[in-house]
Length: 385
Image (cartoon, rainbow, N blue to C red):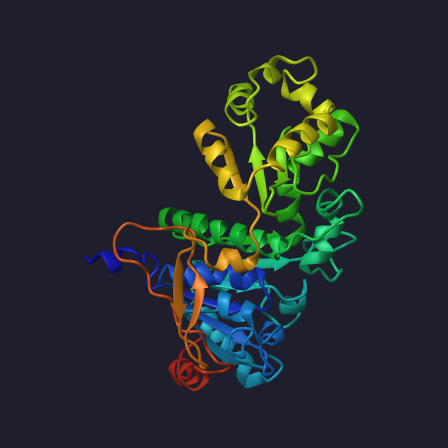
């Protein structure tokens, strides 16, 4: 077996995805990267994420990012022929993923429990906003709405007001949770021979991430405060301006690091034992004074001078870059995906596997594979698996 084959462990699996936007495509894109055949079922007008922007050579940046390596077919499941075709595709599938409104597919005859009753090895994934039951089940749920509802926005941003996390963190978290659950279900199926049902909601995904603020609030009666580019419970841990305008973010994690920072960066070892500055708890209580002292020091150094001092002291730090700086960052790895409008360079997936690198798949045009898929599944008998 070649390294390339070893890097595609899901080769041979068929994933049918009735998906749109970000959360479900995040899950299935990762499955496609691992070698699964992903057939993306779109409405006749296409996944609405195709129209989010035109930044990627005239195409949506979201769509190009999350749909490489998939096949596209446009179906209208209200049409009896298209509905029958979808049923034949699912009959052969290993995984069926959908993120339509709760109950929509069940009303069309494609409810997850019903599908698994017909196809015992099928793994179904239902992605929703707030789950399938309860007062919020019928609520429309998009990333920023759930950032607000989950409390994330209330602890994000500047003290002057709440803020949005700058990427679709709720959708991405949901897709990553769904992806991990599918891999677990595939392992379980290898043992039991049976598929299972998976349900992931946007709210649940972010609620899990909100456990520390939740525990902090329920343990102290106070919610974490918005502190901008600083840490609400560690000091000093924040951004400080240098003489040339650069912002450097310094992170002190323990008293050993604090002592080294005082001696090696600030040049005053006595600060580590000053009353009110000796422990993290004391420093957080006196954050204004501690941060002001650190800020005065950094204001006298350029970016290069600050970096030299921090490196010498072994202090953790990073510079607050813009997207322009990020695009040129020496640690940024890239892949190139083919699209109808030419190749697009993307940030590479986070996981790196030993052996040959996985090539990025082609980003499909709407219904690009429709004719071939219709021919392939035309004569399929819809029989239980």
